[in-house]
Image 1 (tube, rainbow, N blue to C red):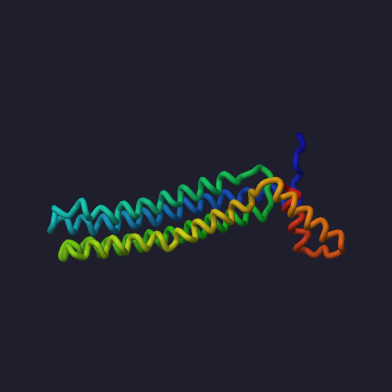
Image 2: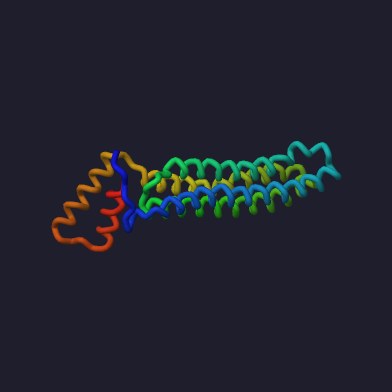
Length: 196
């Protein structure tokens, strides 16, 4: 068994950035989900005083806010699958970026669901025909950042490609290096593939 020695591009602290990415995804998404649940719950309670028959319909915003927290959990697990004891700074930074972008977008979506849910539940109590419009708004808010989540998960999966693909990229970089074009970018790419 060979032990990988930390290098300049594969330091001991590189996995820390990946862990922070996974943490950011779940924490920020849960902040957004908690705010959305609380804000929608206040609107539901206020609406329930006037129209208790519509309480079960008014639970939709609370459920949508909770789903945002589940998105954060899924992304943090996907990022966590890429953790290794020795990994490059490149992979750690990609995991950090994926987690932060999904987490902050989830927090913003949770705020939007809370504000729209509060106003929508109260308005649908006064005019029941507004309920369909409120539900349609909920389908667009989380969906607007779900594309970003999928993109970040794909970006994160590129850091853990198969060995054959990794070998082909490494071989191409080494060949380019032999031709005398070793720039700092080429050195960084070489270090990324050597640490794997």
